[in-house]
Image 1 (cartoon, helix red, strand yellow):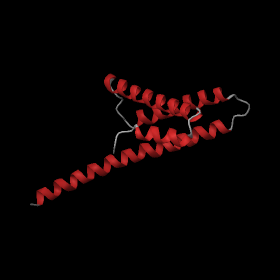
Image 2 (image 1 turned 135 degrees about the horizontal axis):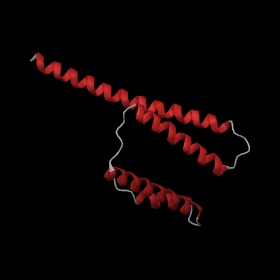
Image 3 (image 1 turned 90 degrees about the vertical axis):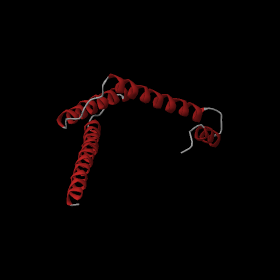
Amino acid sequence: MGGGRQVSEVRASWDALADANGLHLILSSECLVACVNAIIKLVDGWTLGKLLATRCAISLVLNLIVCIASDVHFPNAHELLRLVLRGAAYCAFIAFFWASLRSCVPIGDVVVRDARSLPPP
């Protein structure tokens, strides 16, 4: 009976370690976003396009450094394609939702139509 308890304790330890790794990545990401925002705030006289491009480039480089240092596995081609398609679908949703908000349809009707199009929880 004692062996089963040790196995469950080992599993709990591994679960805690996995949670700690995830927490580390989340906190690192937030720190990097704060650093990027601070760097961008120090720049005066840049156009919005130049600020956004610089911010995205800095964020990408810093996040790649953290991923490499944390030994995070990068997605294979199939996972990458699925992630890109998911991102494109999300961006399309935001673009269409923004267009519907700017249209002549009353705002309450737009939100209700979009909420009704979602699958039930």
